[in-house]
Length: 224
Image (cartoon, rainbow, N blue to C red; front, side):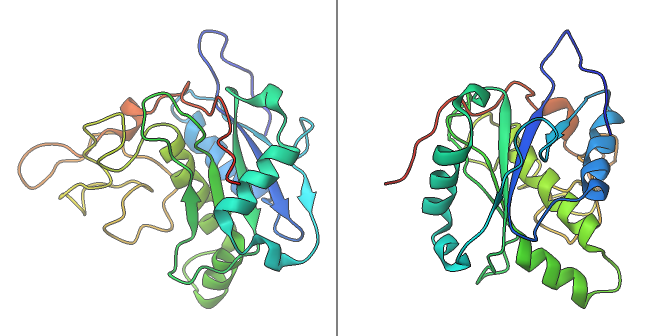
């Protein structure tokens, strides 16, 4: 899906690199793009259409140290000219030992200093194949949007910007967001908008009102 750019603010861009056979297809891309589009935000995903989106091959065991391998991929294949513009997603064939579907390399400061997306593709594929209520496309879109949300400033307590009442919210049921850790919402591809009432008479956290479109990595801190 191709959309026009907003000239008055920074559109979010994301390059998606991948391990062989773990491509982010057009369907999950469009699910996320449309979620942003409903809020007049144009998300651009480069799966190769803009010169990025590389496919890596070889022994999958070299990915076993996720942090080390991700930064080596970034250092070798992610153009420095894209720093400060593109978020960097990498879809791997790793299987998590603790059920984690994605990781974000988050910086504990307000101006991102190396935070990017890491998605564990094999675990997503396995979960989707074992369930009748979710497809691989929907689950991949959900995880992608969740990790991108961290990049855009929706981060746990202890990171900036704070305070954040979403991920650690006590209002589990009313907080309808893909950022919610507290209840299973793996079919949801959206952030909350603060419109839902809580049991105390307040409202859920407004994710869309707090995302920071200009928050994107400006340098690499490569792990040696």
